[in-house]
Image 1 (cartoon, rainbow, N blue to C red):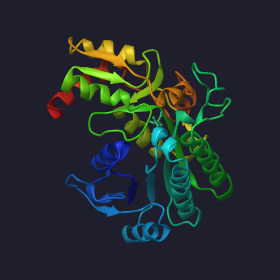
Image 2 (cartoon, protein in one colour):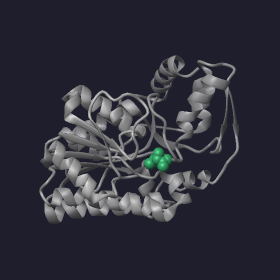
Image 3 (tube, rainbow, N blue to C red):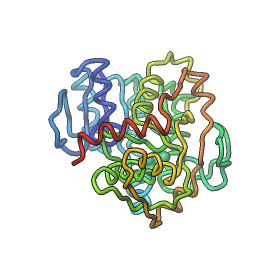
Image 4 (cartoon, rainbow, N blue to C red):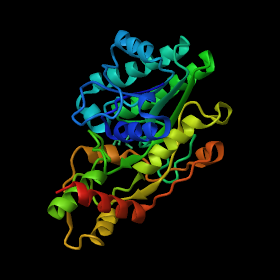
Length: 311
Ligand code: VAH
């Protein structure tokens, strides 16, 4: 059985759906800190990931062998609450890693992020191995988490797998508290109001990815034979790189009256500390990763689907 922690979040929502398609509704336990709003088509448990006893109870009750740990504070929210971000992002990981160390579960997925990189990292085609001096609390927690994943793998043989996600864009769920959130919100506002005020300036180019690709990568890395997963910190993963101006021209193809304006806030500084594009050669080589969506096909799919949802 698989347990998804943080199942109501941006990634969790789509991941639970896809895992249930592939493995069956009853094989995937969704869990989050609160009871979900929408109807669930499979088992759900309320879980505060900082509560070890509650976690163990759920794992034993459902005979969970695999955990996807998606509960975290994202970059922007973490800057507003650094201490809690550190507590949540780190202790959630320890709680799950320790279950594997004790032999109770067999496999872990833990998401890292391009936020592990910082202002001193080469920004174009950022390599797998490079300078990493993250300047955000979120980035520091992801960087530390990567070191711990590798450590638990080396020391205790824990089978933990991880991806450094870029900004993720999807129509089924909303991001909560990240710096790349604009790239989802812009589609919603374009369809609703034909205009968008962007909190990043027009030339802020960042690595992004369509959610379908991200979910594919996540399940693919978890399905790969263990010996193929040579990197036990976290894999670079690349999709699309664009700035607000690029995406706004793309949206104008479908919504000609769309207009974008710019008003930078504190998130500009976070974005400026991150890479613009990523080299993901190792993911391609080790577990056959390839992305399917580019800016054009991603935007077309977002608009087609969101038009039916957003009114
Ligand atoms: C954030 N979406 O903006 C996240 C992400 C690439 C950054 O990890 O915080």
